[in-house]
Length: 54
Image (tube, rainbow, N blue to C red):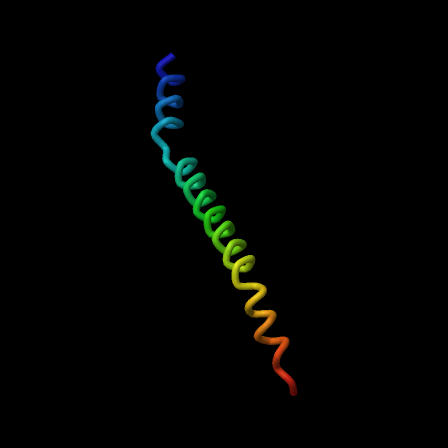
């Protein structure tokens, strides 16, 4: 029984899972910001480059 409790404590004390979730949330937030920026600025950038002639 004490071995089971030791394993249970080890699982609840470790922070790798929480860190992985935090990194996942950060990546998701960065993706949302990137999509919003492209959606907002995409038309303006396209208009800028469409006016160029070579």
